[in-house]
Image 1 (cartoon, rainbow, N blue to C red):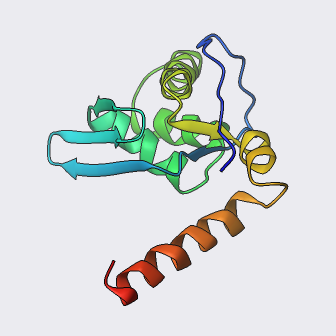
Image 2 (tube, rainbow, N blue to C red; image 1 turned 135 degrees about the vertical axis):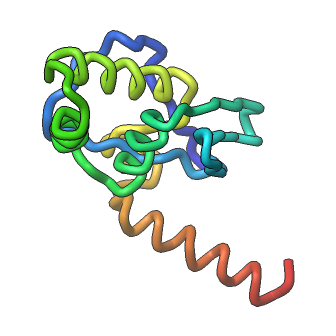
Length: 134
């Protein structure tokens, strides 16, 4: 399987239309206090506070950076620039840990298949494993 790579720099400039995708081996569990992201293949664990959970859920659903920032601006009385910087930093931190990937990175690693098709294929694969009792 091709390896996904992500830049280590967290100072990446993001646009409103950028969309990111969750890594294929990422496990997510939520509680009332936040959530934990675990990638067992990389031995990486990240704890999220409730705002991090809000951002992560939107990223997981495929929302663009601008839409996520606008939703947070509407919910919290903070300047859009500050929220944009915080969202960018959050995304940069997850990308540096190789937990989030850009659409281009996913397509490159999957031989040109779209992330949506890849997710569907992963779902079918997990379903087949359950049916076979693996």
